[in-house]
Length: 111
Length: 110
Image (tube, rainbow over all chains, first blue to last red):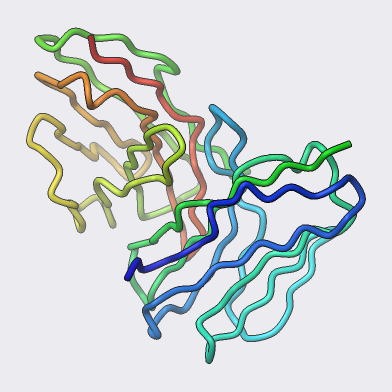
């Protein structure tokens, strides 16, 4: 079982729709959860981080964490073509420097 | 400011060459990382330095040699690489939990 799993996609949504990206993780000791956006040929860019169960909103982005289910998600409201990218889920344990990435979900927002 | 810089942006080298990748951050972060990323794959952790000491080495071949001269700088020395080592090499730093990535060095080994 992979440590961090994501649906590789591609996920295609129309412009203005809600894009829902999902991630599960295997280590119950994981404490910190991150979403990165990566455009083709570029480096990962931090979008959101979440530590506590529940929702965290930042503009059009909402991260959701359910530690009991070992599940973290990212919702993108009012999706724009510029949101088309690969979204990487990353997970860290407590008090360590080891961040584990999922394989990424490729999102395409169609005009 | 969350900037991590990397030089060079692109590097082409032969299998007998010796080259170095450089990474710099001035955010006071105490952890610095090297990742390797192949096309359509996630970043793959290579090395972690914490307080200028190597804390994680993910069984990386010895042809890759990291160095942390001070808390702001991280180098990756390359020697006798193979064509399959061609990839995007990413540096990152973190002060607490969040990692910030540099723009990467696109390495091609001929």
